[in-house]
Image: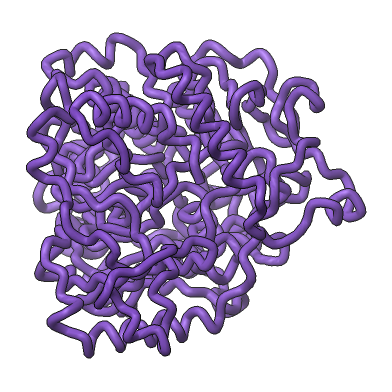
Length: 605
């Protein structure tokens, strides 16, 4: 009797607290320290809310950097489980494809670069996606935001890949107000879609606000007690172009670097969006039976305001700054909350984790590279994951090697191939991992000024093998390849093992039929039949015209050499891992090169 009375009192207090909370707009429930020990047992599978940001760096959240104001994210993370050994992919499409399929890039054919707007390519149609599995488990599935997994055929669209509804943009980057998206000079079109049709006339509202509004509308019309919900909010923010309402920039007026100031404002808008979504979860009755996951898709690009400090490298590279992601889980269903998890976790793990959490049958999907991590996240049990294949890109090879750079291991693995793997404490990189600087936070108006060279990576020229003990050296400052050749050989053997399971790279040439001018001014599917597709289907091969094409595009940006705000944004292009700072020996030349890189940041593979 005493136990039942206590339980009733707890229930009444909880209900009263929640009722009072609902009357306070845009606020988050204040938990007491004792709340961390309370676990709500769901009567049905939990509602799953997955929030994915774009290009948010390791140093771009308040609990890693107090200069960034994210009170909502900080509070949700503090009350949940912070994932501090969590990995994503270095660019957009690879991370999204692995989230949707639970497979490494080498098993989907998307090993190289991104899916460009004019490429006749998309997420393999023969693979069952995460939302499709959740639909089979009885979920209502909705997606709002950036897709970037191909759209050349209608079969590639989100509504054909497992989502009951979709509202957002199909390409890699759009203007936050006009929803215009460009794939090069003169190749621009409108990119905002409602389901499988173009959502004309919706321009003028900032995309993060527009997407948040749609999520809240879905939450208000769905019946949480009748059917579990999967909501995938894939924000465009904080990807370029750097755009923000002025009111959000003002709190950061003390930041000397303009790009950093705008970028920080965009992060604060994301924080506000998450606050509004979590308020809606409580208001409409989802919260007590919900799991909220927050993740970035890759590291930040410092030349456009982001920061991965103190990690090495940036977006588009296999250094930690490119692949170690910001992430956390917040849920009343967590058994052990208010803690930091150092368990090894990868973006492929969300597929089996969420399918298992939904009560689905993970064994129905063969060939998964992910693991069910819910016991590790919720209870703190040991992670089943021991290694991560960051990627193998056979189309990206170094043309020359320096003596002692790894040729002795060629009989096991071609070390000119760009690849990276993590096994236990050790991480191996081969080929060209990408620009490997340690880039301090952009706090000076003339960043990156003369002090930039203090953290430049002068070594490594001509190398093709690097080895780090990531647990002991998370900032990758001590290359152990020469001291531990035994570990190098073991990890090269693991790369060779994975490579034997790889499927051919799918990276077809651009199809001129995708030009928005031929499709009513918008980016839409342009291939209507298998017969049409045969003309453009195939595996990427290096051609004679590629160099000429790139030179023309470089010349275009060189001639412009103008501030970004007056340029049409070349959306849908990811920064190349090979486009490191290579020119400008004089101070003036270096500044010119950096300005050009800022413009080209999203224009290269």
